[in-house]
Amino acid sequence: MPYENLDDEAVHQRTRAGQLPREAPDRLRLATVDGRTLDDRGGDSGASNDDPSATGIVKPLPPELFVEHETNAEMRWDAMGDIGFHVPNDRFFVRNHTSTPIIDAATWRLRLHGTGLSAPRSFGYQELLAMPSVTRDVAIECAGNGRSLFTTQQHQEVTGTPWRLGGIGVARWRGVPLATVLERSGITTDAVDVMARGLDPAYVADGVDYGRVRRPIPVAKALRDVILAYEMNDEPLPPDHGHPVRLIVPGWIGLASVKWVGDIEVSTSPLSSPWNTEFYRMFGDAYPPQGGAPLTTQGVRSAFELPWNATLVAGRPYLLRGRSWSGNGRIADVEVSLDDGATWQRAPLRGPHVASTWTRWQVTWKPAETGRHFLLARATDETGAVQPSHTTHNDFGYLFDAVVRHPVTVVSG
Image (cartoon, rainbow, N blue to C red; front, side, top):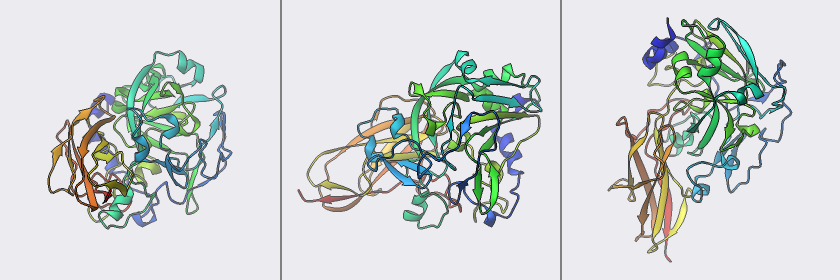
């Protein structure tokens, strides 16, 4: 099948829906729950997998900026109030399956191989830096972002890291279009899948070694807008965010933006890994027994830049700010309710309005009544998709996109 035909995302979804898990769904484990680190499998990566800290994360994680979840660190939305459009590197959330590897860019190599290449080869770090580059603002969001809200808001049981809404960040990424590297490696017209593999330690759960993180994407997507990034917010990639090189896959779940890329396989037949057969699929009563298709694009979401359970004073005016985003395009409209959904008002949009990122907005509120209140934000993207009032349950808590009831308490002045 010529790779041009895979531009139809429905074709890709139907193909992947047929890739069944190796075992029954009740054996599945998220790559966030019971992982531990194995020794690296070697190769000419220049990687060292010494555990940098108790969490496996290198950078400091001050509690006023992050909520720690074992090997992950969630951004605090209330720490975003004084931050502009981009999340600074030291405040960007961290999603690791195991731990951050320390990689020497001078010895690192990117190997391209597979049946979909006529001239497989490898590239060094300096070779990539010498190629024509692109710079793009793109959001990275964990597929489990909002997972805890299945329980706290919808009273449903799920498994996995209890992210609230801080498993997202927007950064300015600079790098080489993946298409450039694929073309220089002789990508063939019958190639269908591209799979990057990271250099982080192998993921192990319940005694099963799943190997390093890897996830296939269709060639059409790889050629369209994916980049091999080596800079984040005008600085070399920090270790926790993929140094020396990572994928950036706009609009798709964060897993697809593989960090610490060491090799890329290009194939003339569909590729699979545990990360698109056993993990990152929908399971539950609303889905087929073998699970839904592998997850790709993100839905529409919104968040207030406000502490959870914030305390406000009655009679004082507040400027409430927030951000909304969608994996399918720009945000077209945001409505806010200050009375738990009884009435709604349009929130003025502000700042950059860029696809594959987020849009900032604000409203003013002068609470009159003391007590507990719920603030709601509901976004619509340019495709017409609107945040629902309820997200269909899935066992592993992926893709929570319902309107969130943000609790605040108003007290007397």
